[in-house]
Length: 305
Image (cartoon, rainbow, N blue to C red; front, side):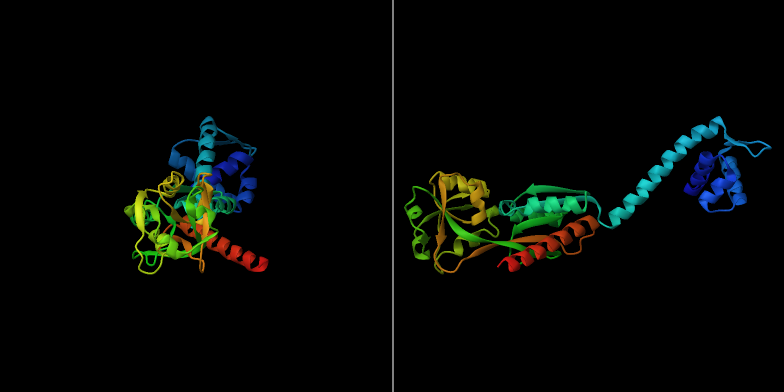
């Protein structure tokens, strides 16, 4: 028995007339009659009674079969539609990791909003984690896309593109001597006490400090933190100062102030990393949307400037 047999049966059950049902199905009436007889033979039951006056009625077995046949056809249609939507990337789950700076800059919120608007059946799950953990998770398959601190190179099988850049600024407690200065030189910074990430979370972050110090200077690291919020908490507790992308100010205690660093601005780049040969159409669709949004944002920036 095939789905077409169920469609033939439900058409006749709806019309209670073979000629009208055949016309609705766009097949010849004798062909439809033959298919219904085959179905009855296959099932071993009589589905319709036919009178000499060409009156057609459902038997009790036919009434019960009609309910199941309609449900089966609906399930088949849903499965067929789901398969086509999945192939187009319109349904599925996408697991996205992000560093805090990406959330602070609005990229995660924007991604969820425009993904839902364009593909409401794609579920985007977000997980905050540092760069190194995201790289490992993408490599293992437990993560699909990562918003990371841009790296000089990525593991084999992965590719990335920059989505944004954030200017480096100095985060100090408002009572710190440097808080009274509007712009601070690298020579002054070389003598300061810094708080930094823990070594296993530091991939892509070490350049925050190294970028603003004189060439060859070794920063004095007095405490390490597992994440950006902990880092800013140490600054607010007067443990030390730190160099952060300016958007992270949104997560800092009111006692933390930002100060510019003298000289040409230095930046922290945010990159999107993913598997180079991504098999999931839904993941590929989200990546295309992000690229499209970046391109539109760049266009708006050029026009406004």
